[in-house]
Image 1 (tube, rainbow, N blue to C red):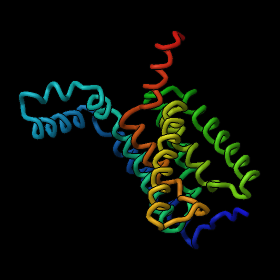
Image 2 (image 1 turned 90 degrees about the vertical axis):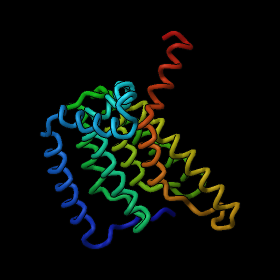
Image 3 (image 1 turned 120 degrees about the vertical axis):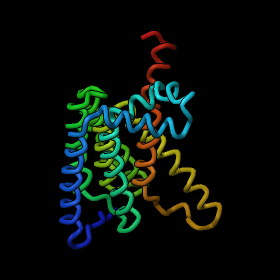
Image 4 (image 1 turned 135 degrees about the vertical axis):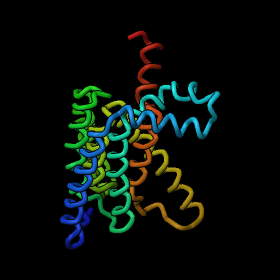
Length: 229
């Protein structure tokens, strides 16, 4: 029977203070002039690629997007890093990170408008509902949840930041990475078929991949072109 992990004494308080500090840092970052950020980024590109090709590189969508969206990605990376740390150290995904993360993600979507607010809210609700159903079905067939409730809340946080399409893609990328890791560990004799894998870090890695490459949006565009809708 699945037993939820309990946070160690003081962990929730420490994480709440960390989230408050992170929020204050993000607010400071948001007050910075985007033009200064862009100038610094262009300087790094010029240093790395040389003056001749820096303009072409700077005009690519990924660089122009990151020059404006870096506070959002920095915030998401901070949340995912904290979750990964506690998943490996304590085998928990703290509510003190995922629940505020949903609120911060929705707020940043509303402020930056890089995905629609409807997509963000749908990413939270659909992602959490889908994983809850999968977990319920897995429990009925295998006798355990398969993944903790923290993963469900983490999926909601990812959905708040990335929107419904890219958050779904992040889940499947994470599942693929976790499956590959599990098979490798079984083949090497370090894990048996009954042991569960901590899915949080793989979901986090999937979210980062879909942040860099919006696989959900790309796949949706492919379907629209193929089926004409």
